[in-house]
Image (cartoon, rainbow, N blue to C red; front, top):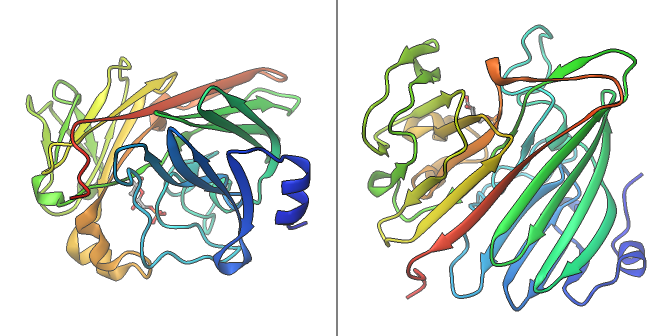
Length: 295
Ligand code: BG6
Protein backbone atom coordinates (compact mmCIF):
# COMPACT_ATOMS: atom_id res chain seq x y z
CA UNK A 1 0.00 0.00 0.00
CA UNK A 2 1.32 3.43 -0.87
CA UNK A 3 1.97 5.59 2.19
CA UNK A 4 0.11 8.84 2.54
CA UNK A 5 2.16 11.96 3.33
CA UNK A 6 -0.47 13.42 5.66
CA UNK A 7 -0.82 10.17 7.62
CA UNK A 8 2.97 10.05 8.00
CA UNK A 9 3.05 13.64 9.24
CA UNK A 10 0.38 12.74 11.80
CA UNK A 11 2.29 9.67 12.98
CA UNK A 12 5.88 10.95 12.89
CA UNK A 13 5.59 14.69 13.31
CA UNK A 14 8.87 16.38 14.10
CA UNK A 15 10.09 19.98 13.83
CA UNK A 16 12.84 18.92 11.47
CA UNK A 17 10.89 16.60 9.17
CA UNK A 18 7.85 16.95 6.91
CA UNK A 19 6.49 14.38 4.49
CA UNK A 20 5.28 15.51 1.08
CA UNK A 21 4.14 14.01 -2.18
CA UNK A 22 6.68 14.68 -4.91
CA UNK A 23 7.24 13.84 -8.59
CA UNK A 24 5.56 10.63 -9.75
CA UNK A 25 3.41 10.67 -6.62
CA UNK A 26 6.42 9.44 -4.62
CA UNK A 27 6.26 10.22 -0.90
CA UNK A 28 9.37 12.01 0.29
CA UNK A 29 10.61 13.20 3.65
CA UNK A 30 12.14 16.67 3.77
CA UNK A 31 14.58 17.34 6.61
CA UNK A 32 15.36 20.91 7.64
CA UNK A 33 17.53 21.48 10.71
CA UNK A 34 20.16 24.08 11.68
CA UNK A 35 22.83 21.56 10.61
CA UNK A 36 21.51 20.50 7.21
CA UNK A 37 18.80 20.16 4.61
CA UNK A 38 18.05 16.65 3.38
CA UNK A 39 15.52 14.57 1.56
CA UNK A 40 14.69 10.89 1.16
CA UNK A 41 12.15 8.78 -0.72
CA UNK A 42 10.19 5.81 0.59
CA UNK A 43 10.69 4.41 -2.93
CA UNK A 44 13.95 2.54 -2.59
CA UNK A 45 14.59 3.87 0.92
CA UNK A 46 16.74 6.32 -0.96
CA UNK A 47 18.40 9.49 0.30
CA UNK A 48 18.24 12.02 -2.54
CA UNK A 49 19.62 15.22 -0.98
CA UNK A 50 21.94 16.30 1.77
CA UNK A 51 23.30 19.79 2.14
CA UNK A 52 25.14 20.50 5.41
CA UNK A 53 25.01 24.11 6.63
CA UNK A 54 27.51 26.32 4.82
CA UNK A 55 27.99 23.94 1.90
CA UNK A 56 26.44 23.22 -1.46
CA UNK A 57 24.54 20.03 -2.19
CA UNK A 58 26.77 17.00 -1.66
CA UNK A 59 24.70 14.34 -3.43
CA UNK A 60 23.98 14.38 -7.14
CA UNK A 61 20.45 13.75 -8.37
CA UNK A 62 20.09 13.43 -12.13
CA UNK A 63 18.07 16.24 -13.76
CA UNK A 64 16.75 13.41 -15.97
CA UNK A 65 15.83 11.09 -13.07
CA UNK A 66 12.69 9.05 -13.69
CA UNK A 67 10.12 8.67 -10.90
CA UNK A 68 8.25 5.47 -11.74
CA UNK A 69 7.30 2.67 -9.32
CA UNK A 70 9.19 -0.09 -11.13
CA UNK A 71 12.36 1.90 -11.77
CA UNK A 72 15.22 3.10 -9.59
CA UNK A 73 15.86 6.83 -9.22
CA UNK A 74 19.19 7.94 -10.71
CA UNK A 75 21.13 9.78 -8.03
CA UNK A 76 21.35 10.23 -4.28
CA UNK A 77 22.11 6.98 -2.47
CA UNK A 78 20.31 4.00 -3.99
CA UNK A 79 20.65 0.83 -1.90
CA UNK A 80 22.02 -2.17 -3.76
CA UNK A 81 20.69 -5.29 -2.01
CA UNK A 82 20.59 -8.32 -1.90
CA UNK A 83 22.85 -8.47 -4.94
CA UNK A 84 25.17 -6.03 -6.68
CA UNK A 85 25.19 -5.62 -10.47
CA UNK A 86 23.53 -8.33 -12.51
CA UNK A 87 22.11 -11.28 -10.53
CA UNK A 88 24.66 -14.13 -10.75
CA UNK A 89 22.13 -16.74 -11.86
CA UNK A 90 18.65 -15.27 -12.44
CA UNK A 91 18.36 -13.99 -15.99
CA UNK A 92 16.21 -10.88 -16.20
CA UNK A 93 16.50 -10.04 -12.50
CA UNK A 94 16.95 -6.30 -11.96
CA UNK A 95 20.42 -4.79 -11.75
CA UNK A 96 21.62 -4.13 -8.16
CA UNK A 97 18.86 -6.09 -6.41
CA UNK A 98 15.39 -5.31 -5.17
CA UNK A 99 15.86 -2.71 -2.43
CA UNK A 100 16.10 0.33 -4.66
CA UNK A 101 12.67 -0.21 -6.19
CA UNK A 102 11.00 -1.47 -3.01
CA UNK A 103 8.46 0.74 -1.23
CA UNK A 104 9.90 1.11 2.28
CA UNK A 105 7.85 1.99 5.39
CA UNK A 106 8.75 4.46 8.10
CA UNK A 107 9.76 2.65 11.29
CA UNK A 108 10.85 5.57 13.47
CA UNK A 109 11.92 9.20 13.50
CA UNK A 110 14.23 10.48 16.25
CA UNK A 111 15.89 13.78 16.90
CA UNK A 112 19.29 13.84 18.56
CA UNK A 113 20.85 17.29 18.91
CA UNK A 114 20.76 18.88 15.47
CA UNK A 115 20.38 15.57 13.66
CA UNK A 116 17.21 13.86 12.47
CA UNK A 117 17.45 10.07 12.37
CA UNK A 118 14.96 8.36 10.10
CA UNK A 119 14.65 4.57 10.10
CA UNK A 120 12.81 2.83 7.27
CA UNK A 121 12.01 -0.87 7.07
CA UNK A 122 11.31 -3.46 4.41
CA UNK A 123 11.09 -7.22 4.05
CA UNK A 124 13.09 -8.29 1.00
CA UNK A 125 13.40 -11.97 0.05
CA UNK A 126 13.50 -13.22 3.65
CA UNK A 127 15.69 -10.36 4.91
CA UNK A 128 14.16 -8.02 7.49
CA UNK A 129 15.85 -4.76 6.56
CA UNK A 130 16.18 -1.50 8.43
CA UNK A 131 17.78 1.50 6.82
CA UNK A 132 18.68 4.50 8.98
CA UNK A 133 19.69 7.88 7.61
CA UNK A 134 21.02 10.31 10.19
CA UNK A 135 20.82 13.79 8.68
CA UNK A 136 23.17 16.15 10.50
CA UNK A 137 26.49 17.93 9.96
CA UNK A 138 27.58 14.50 8.65
CA UNK A 139 25.31 12.10 6.79
CA UNK A 140 25.38 8.65 8.36
CA UNK A 141 23.58 5.78 6.68
CA UNK A 142 23.20 2.30 8.16
CA UNK A 143 21.74 -0.78 6.56
CA UNK A 144 20.86 -3.53 9.02
CA UNK A 145 19.56 -6.87 7.79
CA UNK A 146 18.29 -9.87 9.76
CA UNK A 147 18.09 -13.31 8.20
CA UNK A 148 14.53 -14.55 8.72
CA UNK A 149 15.05 -17.68 6.64
CA UNK A 150 15.43 -21.08 8.34
CA UNK A 151 18.90 -21.53 6.82
CA UNK A 152 22.04 -19.45 6.42
CA UNK A 153 21.95 -17.07 3.51
CA UNK A 154 24.27 -14.58 1.89
CA UNK A 155 23.93 -11.23 0.19
CA UNK A 156 25.78 -8.38 -1.42
CA UNK A 157 25.04 -4.76 -0.49
CA UNK A 158 26.27 -1.27 -1.32
CA UNK A 159 25.43 2.36 -0.66
CA UNK A 160 25.50 3.42 -4.32
CA UNK A 161 26.32 7.05 -3.49
CA UNK A 162 26.30 9.65 -6.28
CA UNK A 163 28.41 12.67 -5.29
CA UNK A 164 28.04 16.10 -6.85
CA UNK A 165 31.27 17.48 -8.29
CA UNK A 166 32.07 20.47 -10.51
CA UNK A 167 34.03 18.66 -13.18
CA UNK A 168 34.74 14.96 -13.45
CA UNK A 169 38.01 15.70 -15.27
CA UNK A 170 39.39 17.63 -12.29
CA UNK A 171 38.38 15.29 -9.49
CA UNK A 172 40.89 13.34 -7.42
CA UNK A 173 39.87 10.35 -5.27
CA UNK A 174 42.19 9.45 -2.42
CA UNK A 175 42.32 6.43 -0.13
CA UNK A 176 42.55 3.73 -2.81
CA UNK A 177 46.18 4.26 -3.82
CA UNK A 178 47.46 0.99 -2.38
CA UNK A 179 44.64 -1.32 -3.44
CA UNK A 180 44.30 -3.35 -6.61
CA UNK A 181 40.92 -3.47 -8.26
CA UNK A 182 38.63 -5.38 -10.60
CA UNK A 183 38.17 -3.46 -13.84
CA UNK A 184 34.55 -3.89 -14.88
CA UNK A 185 35.16 -1.91 -18.08
CA UNK A 186 37.51 -4.66 -19.20
CA UNK A 187 35.94 -8.08 -18.49
CA UNK A 188 36.79 -7.90 -14.76
CA UNK A 189 40.52 -7.79 -15.41
CA UNK A 190 42.51 -7.57 -12.14
CA UNK A 191 44.53 -4.35 -11.95
CA UNK A 192 47.47 -3.61 -9.62
CA UNK A 193 47.47 -0.66 -7.19
CA UNK A 194 48.06 2.66 -8.98
CA UNK A 195 50.05 4.23 -6.14
CA UNK A 196 48.29 7.57 -6.67
CA UNK A 197 44.82 9.08 -6.28
CA UNK A 198 42.23 7.95 -8.81
CA UNK A 199 41.67 10.40 -11.67
CA UNK A 200 38.87 9.86 -14.10
CA UNK A 201 39.31 10.08 -17.85
CA UNK A 202 36.45 8.41 -19.68
CA UNK A 203 34.48 5.47 -18.32
CA UNK A 204 35.56 4.01 -14.97
CA UNK A 205 33.95 1.03 -13.24
CA UNK A 206 36.17 -0.36 -10.51
CA UNK A 207 35.58 -2.73 -7.61
CA UNK A 208 38.07 -2.68 -4.73
CA UNK A 209 37.81 -5.63 -2.33
CA UNK A 210 39.15 -6.42 1.17
CA UNK A 211 39.50 -2.80 2.28
CA UNK A 212 40.69 -2.04 5.79
CA UNK A 213 38.16 0.73 6.39
CA UNK A 214 40.33 3.83 5.90
CA UNK A 215 38.53 6.93 4.59
CA UNK A 216 38.07 7.74 0.91
CA UNK A 217 38.28 11.39 -0.08
CA UNK A 218 36.90 13.14 -3.14
CA UNK A 219 38.66 16.43 -3.86
CA UNK A 220 36.90 18.66 -6.34
CA UNK A 221 38.14 21.55 -8.49
CA UNK A 222 36.66 23.83 -5.82
CA UNK A 223 38.97 22.18 -3.23
CA UNK A 224 35.90 20.94 -1.39
CA UNK A 225 36.73 17.60 0.24
CA UNK A 226 34.10 14.93 0.68
CA UNK A 227 35.22 12.22 3.10
CA UNK A 228 33.53 8.81 3.19
CA UNK A 229 34.20 6.30 5.94
CA UNK A 230 32.68 2.87 6.25
CA UNK A 231 32.14 0.40 9.07
CA UNK A 232 31.72 -3.27 8.18
CA UNK A 233 32.06 -2.31 4.52
CA UNK A 234 35.02 -4.10 2.94
CA UNK A 235 34.36 -3.16 -0.69
CA UNK A 236 34.46 0.13 -2.55
CA UNK A 237 33.20 0.81 -6.05
CA UNK A 238 34.14 3.81 -8.19
CA UNK A 239 31.90 4.45 -11.17
CA UNK A 240 31.45 7.07 -13.82
CA UNK A 241 29.92 6.01 -17.15
CA UNK A 242 31.81 8.49 -19.34
CA UNK A 243 30.24 10.35 -22.23
CA UNK A 244 29.16 7.51 -24.51
CA UNK A 245 27.55 5.22 -21.93
CA UNK A 246 25.90 8.16 -20.15
CA UNK A 247 24.16 9.19 -23.35
CA UNK A 248 22.98 5.63 -23.93
CA UNK A 249 21.18 5.80 -20.57
CA UNK A 250 17.71 7.42 -20.51
CA UNK A 251 18.20 9.14 -17.15
CA UNK A 252 21.80 10.37 -17.16
CA UNK A 253 22.94 12.25 -20.30
CA UNK A 254 25.29 15.23 -19.83
CA UNK A 255 25.05 14.89 -16.05
CA UNK A 256 27.99 12.44 -16.07
CA UNK A 257 30.38 15.39 -15.90
CA UNK A 258 28.98 16.54 -12.55
CA UNK A 259 28.88 13.20 -10.73
CA UNK A 260 31.00 10.41 -9.45
CA UNK A 261 29.82 7.31 -7.63
CA UNK A 262 31.94 6.20 -4.71
CA UNK A 263 30.14 3.29 -3.12
CA UNK A 264 30.90 1.40 0.08
CA UNK A 265 29.57 -2.07 0.77
CA UNK A 266 30.27 -5.78 0.60
CA UNK A 267 30.23 -7.23 -2.90
CA UNK A 268 31.68 -10.16 -4.87
CA UNK A 269 34.09 -12.10 -2.62
CA UNK A 270 33.22 -9.78 0.27
CA UNK A 271 29.59 -10.95 0.25
CA UNK A 272 28.18 -11.53 3.71
CA UNK A 273 26.78 -14.80 5.07
CA UNK A 274 24.32 -14.60 7.96
CA UNK A 275 22.98 -17.44 10.12
CA UNK A 276 19.20 -17.79 10.69
CA UNK A 277 17.93 -15.13 13.11
CA UNK A 278 21.26 -13.23 13.03
CA UNK A 279 21.79 -9.63 12.03
CA UNK A 280 24.45 -7.79 10.05
CA UNK A 281 24.83 -4.06 9.71
CA UNK A 282 27.07 -1.74 7.72
CA UNK A 283 27.48 2.02 7.92
CA UNK A 284 28.76 4.86 5.79
CA UNK A 285 29.59 8.30 7.16
CA UNK A 286 29.96 11.23 4.77
CA UNK A 287 31.47 14.55 5.86
CA UNK A 288 32.53 17.68 4.00
CA UNK A 289 35.48 20.00 4.55
CA UNK A 290 36.78 23.03 2.76
CA UNK A 291 35.10 25.93 1.06
CA UNK A 292 31.47 26.15 0.15
CA UNK A 293 31.39 26.27 -3.64
CA UNK A 294 28.28 28.38 -3.93
CA UNK A 295 29.82 31.68 -5.01
C1 BG6 B 1 27.79 0.69 -10.63
C2 BG6 B 1 28.31 -0.54 -11.33
O1 BG6 B 1 27.77 0.44 -9.25
O2 BG6 B 1 26.46 0.98 -11.05
C3 BG6 B 1 28.23 -0.33 -12.83
O3 BG6 B 1 29.64 -0.79 -10.93
C4 BG6 B 1 26.81 0.03 -13.23
O4 BG6 B 1 28.63 -1.52 -13.49
C5 BG6 B 1 26.37 1.25 -12.45
O5 BG6 B 1 26.78 0.31 -14.62
C6 BG6 B 1 24.95 1.72 -12.74
O6 BG6 B 1 24.07 0.67 -12.62
P1 BG6 B 1 22.53 0.90 -12.88
O7 BG6 B 1 21.86 -0.44 -12.76
O8 BG6 B 1 22.04 1.89 -11.85
O9 BG6 B 1 22.40 1.49 -14.26
